[in-house]
Length: 460
Ligand code: ADP
Image (cartoon, rainbow, N blue to C red):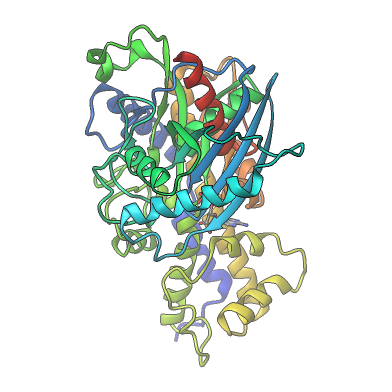
């Protein structure tokens, strides 16, 4: 009869499922590049390639005090940004965690909450002392709103929500102008803020990174979701030819490339766990690329593999496992913690499983979990490299090289995520891949929103 499989035997199966060869990556990059180009041709493609109405790069000398509200996915952030010119800035901010209920209630209520938080923040920061906002009665502070869901814009202070992503589902919002909705809430709470610009975290990161480091050509987010933005020549965007904005040479494009391979599912290597994540999500079929990469999903992919092994009687036999059987019970931060456990006994992993899931683990199991986290995290980073590579290849940045400003918890906190992206870029491009360097864009979405508000005011 068959001998019992060891954890190492099981691991081999997952290794072959989650490993991406350089050749496969290059095929993905080619298809990705075609998709980006198709998105610039006409509307209605899987990857929307949204013109942001941010015309060209900042000079680095934008100055002044700006408010920024950032509705990101996991948190709402309210910031006061002081642009000091010469690529320097200061930022003060408060974070509010969004509840799952707030992500599903009526859309106007969500914007009311944003306005209320902003009002409280301003009240706390207005005053005569240094470092405080000096606001006279009747004055308003310019406000940049970072709203990181795909919107279609025809000017900078307007944006119609195309569809919710990242688990949001607030009714009465898709198809509506979210800038108008937020303005309404600002009025309702009498907030002394002048709504100037609507942008997304990715465009914000692109602009803020370039403000600080002018070698930056691409901005990326690896957080709850994933996305990228870059600067495109207006003449190379067939779908906006009719809009008559030829006067501007360049416009930032918010790719919304988390949607790559949605519905068609032709190009990305999806495992059965990825398919379950997709089918049980609130938007099946959509955001196919994002579902393999971003923080919202990696923990869930890991959990599904663990549940499969529980069902097969390989793990936790005779133990209560209901805590692990709950969807999204396994946070992506656990993968980070497992990979960074410095102890031979893998004490951190013991802690995670006993504390959060009330199950006992053997050392062999813990080694397996760590290896599994590594497979899932590494695949996410290598797929992330494919998206960056597609933009680099489309724009011809490879020979000259460029910097890529990146932000989001996955990029900032997952050990080795950036290194794995860099390895991936070398696998795609060979040695020249070294010319493309990602770096952490500090406070990109808030500061970027402030800079975009400043650029918008200058144009007026
Ligand atoms: P957002 O994208 O919502 O603006 P973040 O960039 O903080 O916010 O991303 C939040 C996502 O990052 C969540 O899905 C969370 O699971 C994941 N995350 C949080 N901490 C870590 C960590 N230490 N390592 C990896 N992922 C993390």
